[in-house]
Amino acid sequence: MHQMAIFTHTVFHIEPHSHMQGRTMKTQELTIEGMSCGHCVMHVKKELSKLSGLTIENIEIGKARVQIDESQVNFERMAKAVEEAGYRLVSAS
Image (cartoon, rainbow, N blue to C red; front, side):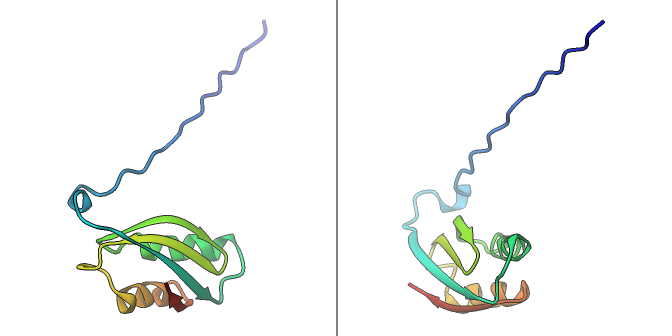
């Protein structure tokens, strides 16, 4: 008898946190120093995702694009999160 394997594909769509709906979000391009690999990306993503008022759009080696609620998140809070991951936030624009 032959066995048949069934594979499924799961897609995750990330919705904004409910407390951010209806608020004006600002896109920030972050430049991050010291990242060199995929593990670096994971560490930065983990720390930034802890910030209330911030939604991650994309993270790559050396940079990230995030949406922030400026009433909750500022450069200093993002810099501290990146520092907790072991890297340095150089700029946000």
